[in-house]
Length: 245
Ligand SMILES: NC(=O)c1ccc[n+]([C@@H]2O[C@H](COP(=O)([O-])OP(=O)(O)OC[C@H]3O[C@@H](n4cnc5c(N)ncnc54)[C@H](O)[C@@H]3O)[C@@H](O)[C@H]2O)c1
Image (cartoon, rainbow, N blue to C red):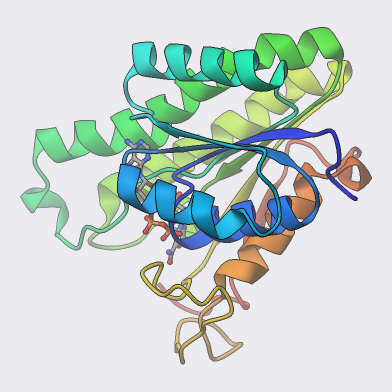
């Protein structure tokens, strides 16, 4: 199978795009370490994945806590011995407020999780990838980081940082076999919906609908695969041809 003998960490794994990615990777033979702050949804997913694989480690970990990230990635190394694929998916994004109403605490929270969480996770696994001259880092950004969303200025800024960080880091790591890319979804069907093929009508895309969790997961899986070894430093939008923000 495509991911036989590959070990993948997915953060924010228990719902939405992260969950769909976990399902597809499990079906393709990966060993999975699933990180999330929600213990209950993590365990639900582990039970769901048992039809495909039992090589699933669930770890309750707040990615914005550097010590917790270090301890959690050490558990992955103990269980699986290496990390080939890192999908930095955990984020907060539900905010609809004009700039002047966004508090300093809300700015810090969005950057602590969406940017520093990604920094801590990447720092924890990158040296092993570079030593083994193989790695796939996929950072989930957003069209908000490309175009900027009104009433989501802190979120947009955090995702802009994810995109530029991915491009810059790729230039350091690609010579040693570690690709780094970001994926920027447009509007995705509500992550509360368990159906990974769920889509609803949307005027924000020329496609006329939201993207599904599966469509996003398919792109992430491709970038995580051996077949994508010559793609690095890219931000790939998956937005049904976005028409307005
Ligand atoms: N859903 C969309 O329309 C959309 C659009 C563009 C980009 N994105 C991005 O896609 C990614 C996934 O979004 P989604 O909507 O599928 O899922 P979601 O936002 O509903 O869930 C994210 C998951 O991350 C977990 N999480 C939150 N904070 C965490 C932390 N500090 N540490 C560890 N885990 C944490 C949550 O418990 C949850 O399981 C995010 O990076 C988001 O910014 C989503």
